[in-house]
Each structure stands twice: as structure tokens, then as C-alpha cells.
Image 1: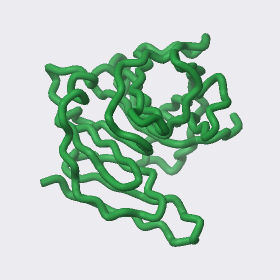
Image 2: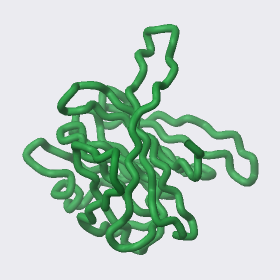
Image 3: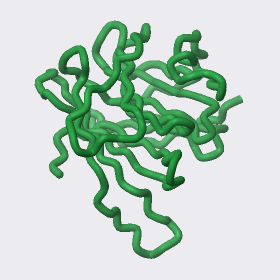
Length: 204
């Protein structure tokens, strides 16, 4: 399918089948003109085999319940396999959910859960063990502790911890490593053509 504005990527294990899946979020919409967003869901290939070709998977076609939105953040809850999206440009960005099991046939409406007191959120990730949630804008990174007795929404209602961050020219990516003890950030190439650098931060 055509790449309209792919903005983020996440990996999550299906809670029913146990299969690890890659989620590609075609959700960028700078001018808020598109009626729908698209999420492509494909099985993660085994890195131990010579053939790492990605096989075609499902596509989730969705709309927001409160109008057209620009977004750059997708996260997958490892406990529920629910998909979370965060809008970008509002003064208080919006958190949405697309619940598992996914509907690959019809256009679905994402559920709006809450508003968060941040703006220009450009990336986020939930750790593989579900113990931590990260989000960032261009200037800061925030961390929420998450426990199994709480929903993602409940955890995000708490006051987050601001983490150290070396500001990047156009830093729009963040992800946990598989241990959940460190995370990475990466910039796009800026208009000044500054080469991107992959940074690793260790959680203390």
C-alpha cells in the first residue's frame, strides 16, 4: 500500500496467538485533512533466518471520534494487545485506543480515553514487560511507571517523571530495548542536513 505519511512503528505480541507483530502507523496528517488513518499489522520475521521478507498482513482502517487529527505516536499494550494512539498538535494531546481483537474488514472508530497536558507528542513506547511507558516531544521525555493491576489510562493519569534528554535536531523517535532497562532515541535528518545519531539512555 502507498506510504501516505508513515510516522511510527511498534512491536507487540498477540495475547491470543503469541505471535510477535509489527504495527506500522500511517497516521501523519499535518493539515488534518484525511478522513481515515491506517495501521498495517504484519507478523515479525525471525531474525535468525536468512529470509527476513515481511509477509502481507492485515490493515486497520480507522477514524477518530472527535474529528481529523495529526498523530505520530503508536503504542501496543503487551498485556491486552490494545493499540494506543496519541495526537500531536493540540495544547492537550488526546489518547485513543483501538481494542484487540482487531477488525480488519470495516472502518473502526478509535475510542478517545483522555487528554494529556502535553503538546507536540511525537513518539511513545510501552516496554515489553509492560512496566514502563515513554513519550516525548521535541524537548522532553516523560516516563510513567505501569503495573499489571492498572490500565494504561490509569497509569497515564499519574504525574510522570521527566527524564534526561539530549535534544536532537528533529527527534521524533523513541523505543525501549527488550530488557526495559534502557531506551533509544533517533532524529530525522533536519533541514540543516545534520546527520542523525542513535542515542541510548539507561534507566536508573
